[in-house]
Length: 128
Image (tube, rainbow, N blue to C red; front, side, top):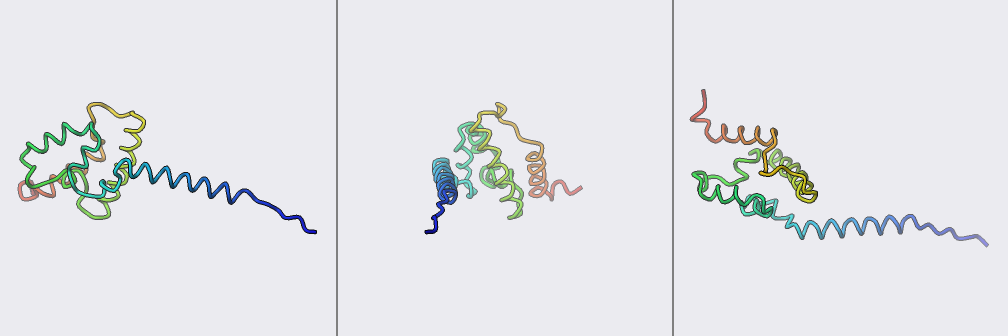
């Protein structure tokens, strides 16, 4: 008789993939991950540390003409969602590990994006 070989590797891999998908899915739902795909400024206060910035924006002159995304992300579709993804990764890691500067500070890369969007929207004023 031929001896039947039993391999547990596929089962272990299936369990690990299932655990990863389950934990990842739970985390995504718990963190309201889908909300980050929108342009709604209320998403910015999902992290309580952003409440002062959100409150400030509500009282600012740009409140009626621009949202957080309009100023803080590139205007092109691909660049916008690449920046959202990169920022989302860094933000979730920073808030999970609690290793961010307080008060929260903008990175040089995000400051350059902000400057670019200011110039883009106000080009008639700063064309020189």
